[in-house]
Length: 605
Image (cartoon, rainbow, N blue to C red; front, top):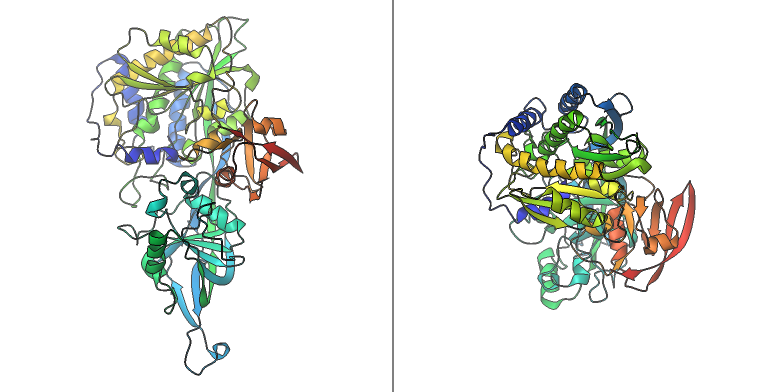
């Protein structure tokens, strides 16, 4: 399960890690064996495009072949695709300030500038979403870098062609202001600075224990195209470049806190040159796809997908929550060797006793990089999407505790409540449900294509995205119990006389999940989180939504909404935050290589 759950994990860090649990049933023993292999040193954390994940792919394919599953990839079981696997700093990265210090009796134009530099890696570093390039301009401080009707750091300052310094977070008095909270994310601030004409933005921490801590450098999973050079800088070196005769960083921050008024200003006699060079690493990985054919000739042409992602964080990437940045194997036993083991186990059961409809067993790669494997498959299916009647996803099903199981996607089909009630009958499970068919796992890719989904999940824990998520902590007997319910629901779908309907309106567009802050309006687009250099590609649009009424469809590439250039999901969230129900705006998008413009009228959520 990907990075979007990181904040939720903070709420449960006080919980102790699971202790070793020995399976007692044959099913539990098989599950434990699968998890032990997938979460082994040999598989090395299953990072996409690594030898470790290739070993895992071979293991899964071997079991599919042993069970007699028909290959449904492009080459045997393999559905290969390319992806961006990471980002590294290039050879040219520097920040140099030229400050003209006034001297009595010496004209400024005759004074040689003093050069000051920030040291890469200790004073500053680029963000993974920064553009590469060289920019030179005046330097300005723009407070918290936010703009709303009640508070606007940009109101009385022109930052065009300047390099701006922005405080992270919000002043304490603004933390309950929904309008300001909407603008508090790094990407929202970077988008705003870009749209105000800034050449670069340098984020500095607020006062506190983390003031001089640089965040982990790595790939931004929701898009690398930000359209602006973006840095993070430690507070101490940042403070030193503030003009000695002007307002200090401490004073400016304190004044904003005390007066609730912006303190933006251009640095006197100061220019900076920022050089950024980021090298994105590309690789090739694969989904594994096999089919058990249905027994009913009239229904065998319809398919239920049951899937799980089998990739994880390898030696620890930008999504790691490990305390140390030293590379170490992130085993990913629960996330998501447990779900992968579930796919293998159910493939064996269905191969021995097929249902009436056919079942596609699929393990996805690239989920931790932004659901890339599942998005690749639904965009380039090896079996027509019109034949897919439902998708069941299993992600982190290995830590069943007190019988608590969450099933999401209940609102995507009117058939689901009855199926879940029947599937859980007489099982010692405490089942909670969620209607939403979108979320930070691979079922979202299918929901976006109008396919009903169910998502099984046993909950977060303190080993999430850490090296301590090891095979011995998986509750294999508990997972076997979960798989009993999954198998029941699967068979009820495969043998139903009619295919499940897709309930329109119960789903929630994924664009609105990228922020914990509620927007006032909905657009109804379903974004493709994989990177596109032209803008934000859409997987689909919600039926009856403003986007659909405006004429947008799946595979359109949004490039502008209102006054905001759209390069990624963060830009879209920033733009949506500026509208209220009833507002009308122009939306610009690319379709079949042509740029089109439509008018969209927003509705309330």
